[in-house]
Image (cartoon, rainbow, N blue to C red; front, side, top):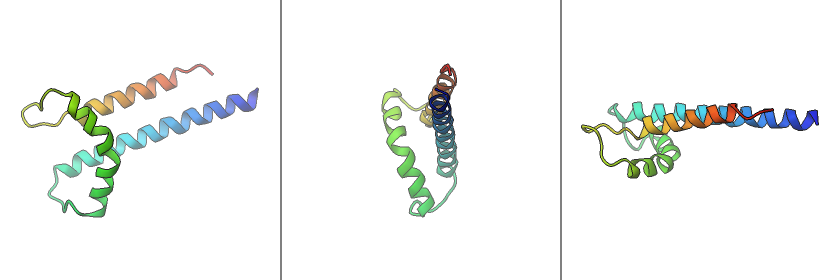
Length: 92
């Protein structure tokens, strides 16, 4: 039973770290969109490929942009933090 408990705790920590890393990628993508950088640079294309499949549905659900600001990264980060908190509340 202790092995199963350790496995569940380890899996929970891995998921929390992966979600935290994804938040970091979203922040990097948001910063890069405000910097004049070559859109064909491999780092820009990588960040777009990783974050766009999740950001695009969030953008479609937001009725409009607020004065030209894209709020989808903020909403997505809040949602991911909520998931991290819920995962942390799983009893062990």
